[in-house]
Length: 493
Image (cartoon, rainbow, N blue to C red):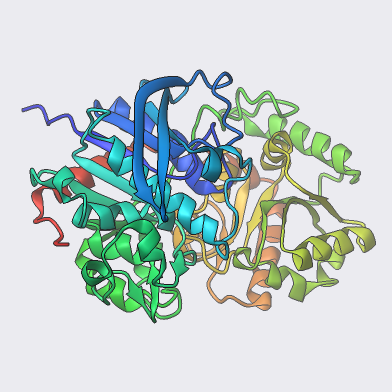
């Protein structure tokens, strides 16, 4: 018996190729297409930031214009639509000149009241517009704190959108650290009744409103982007103050790993790299790409010295305090290190300083998409020592290009990278358990030993490339979860 085709709405603040700042954009650019390939009616709702030009993206007016009282004034939003490139997925974009259109930036900063108001207006506009778009989904799939207020609306003033009892709210946490807290006065802007929502069972958190709690308390299920992270966020060390709440809902907390777009990240057809890398015989391509990358960064081409790549935001979460603690030791190791990224000033300074005084370290502060492709392709190892990592995409891309990840065993890194010391016949990288500089140093020495085994090295490179990180597996897992949650009793408001 054929399974029912579902109507699925994914709501997010960014999606490739329209707007990207973090990993959620990659998810929203790929998961909807994979779900549509399973036969579902999938639609995506985004804000229309100023950088999303109607002519560039073939935006069409839907004719839906909604005016409503918000933040002490009447606000009017317009809804555009287009399709996700290469798919039949409809993308709706909410247009409001004051909150989105005049801003090129995606995010203004969590300490800005307009950051709260603009995403609240977005959420309110979504639920106001859906009836006129003639699309009431079976699954509302919300992402991170910016879209979590929709769950609060659906359980209170917009309960009529789920009155048939056949709709469910799936809430995905991409990073628990960012929760969207503000004083309770924000409820007046949102148009939510404090008596209905401002309680520990609702949005209240140490006297503030916490929008992530809207997704956790009012969602029918909570998902994260890896199985390990779903477990970690229910503990004191990784729960960011919400561990007890998540543990109370543990029977409805699930982890589903992200995938990557195998068309975008394809070493056999990648136009940004010096030479294609084939699965059947990867070493010639890898060697040519490594040579070209070394030339680009001004490093000597020594086949006996492995090249380690970093492509990352340079922030505390990503584990660069461990790199800083090793300091001059990196300069004395028989390795080369190339770094691409930007972020917090201390880490930008760290890598500029290391590059300035170490013959084997080079850094490019900033971001360059084509260069990131060349680093993934030309490196022998990919360093990702994150303190915590909900899912992680870098290690998946590295594996796709035959580059072995060196990771701290946390979150999605633990789920996707199997340590070769523990699993020599099936491992695909190097991982370390203790979050300590010495553990990272030991991992680097193990990497050197693996690389020095010239007879065994080609097998490891080819094995890395066989890791299946396609979105089809993730989409099938979400499909199963959607159908499961539709059979569960709905969460009460």
